Image (cartoon, rainbow, N blue to C red; front, side, top):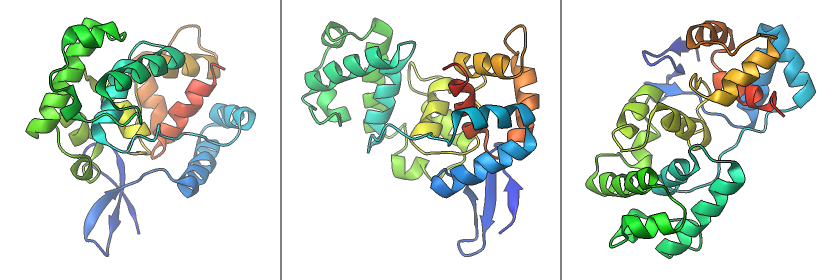
Length: 231
């Protein structure tokens, strides 16, 4: 089953049985393959992998599209603990104590109510727009997105107010488990790269992209190790 390069830059392979291009997603077997591949391709990264240990990249476990993206919006520019607290309050406001909020639960919820549980004005408007676009079908269902190439998914999601490329990339990594995502705008990835490779300043996007070519088709895993370099 030979590998191929999709037009989006994602690593794909041709599935003869289905007669279509398939994108690699990360399961336990793929994580092991990724660590071996990255260790062979990059000496400095191999040293970081040796220090950190096995890859524990995993999703947050939201079973639906709205919950995942609402959580991502809430989490923007916040620590993990603060984001979890506010998302919990958001779910209580919607009557989703199981932390599985649905777009219809925002019906009648005002911006002021959202702000009262800790969302900024921008995030409140983004969550409302997300619910509206999912119900309208502008944002495609999760079952459809799962079958699409990475870049097509990003372009669909960034139609939502408050969802930029970084948020869409986090969705690819943590909800869909896509193996070859490189979030070049992520401050943690850039700082981790600087520390790992002994740079005096954080790399610009061009340098990061050029170096990360050797990480393909497992740039998501390499990015996860860049985050771990900060610990």
